[in-house]
Image (cartoon, rainbow, N blue to C red; front, side, top):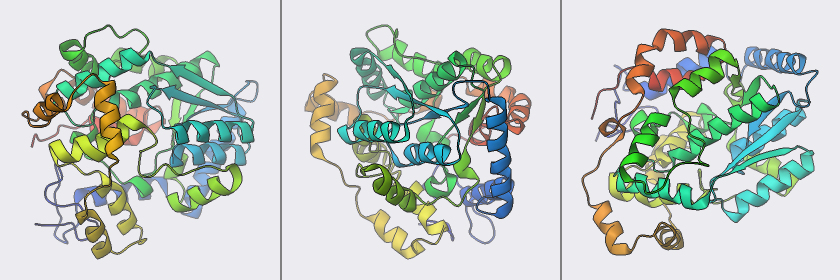
Length: 379
């Protein structure tokens, strides 16, 4: 088995390649992002300070000057703390997919109360959301939790538009989380709709889908920008958790993206058992790259199976109206992926010159441009 000489990504990772030094293309991509955003440097701090000044200036006459998406997890919680620490006036936005863990819900309440931040929440109909997740499981694709990611994006745009805010802050860090292969986490509105049309049993009414025309409406006509402050700083998830626990009585929820039960099922059971996808390699590789652990330690950690609470499995199949026999049939069915269903991927590729320009103006994240706007070799 061939591994990257700098992280723990192996030749099994989709679309991986290695240079003459044995460094994988994902590490090289992170190097490029660090160089572009001057991550963790004095220059990066200046760039981010200038962005903060512009947000304050553009929002000086508004009730809020930015929108911050919050899930109750580490990164989004720390971002809300960071926004207030930098004297911004954020509106916290939460998409409630009705699968929140109790800890995540309490974390959101604690932070918004302590920071005196208003909370804008969109609660989807639970039966409707369950129908969407069940459709994704029936479709035999990985990353069944991606409808939540798209819905949060749409809700943040809606909230920003409602209050005339021009900036959305997102709590993503390529330093702490690494770069996930597109095949592990692809989503767009057309893709979600195509799977639901095929396997769903009720209409999507309260689910806030966002197809490409709506996406372009937000970025081209509303001109709402997306900023990822953690891309500019030397962000440490461990330090962030310590700060949050100390100041807000914030609680850890047990693992990467496990603040939501459906995501815990996806990452802890569905992906590793059905697809042999263990997304711990993203965060473990990130820890190796930053020197928090050695490469040998990372490989050893990754060789152990992910921890998974069997109660989550029982809860999920019961709530989705499945029994263990039906689930076993699904888990052993032929695996599929995003390219087996209708999507907007080809359109994103055709519009690559446009998205390149939009990236330069912070109207779409650089990660979107890199992951969605280039052809991908099917595995």
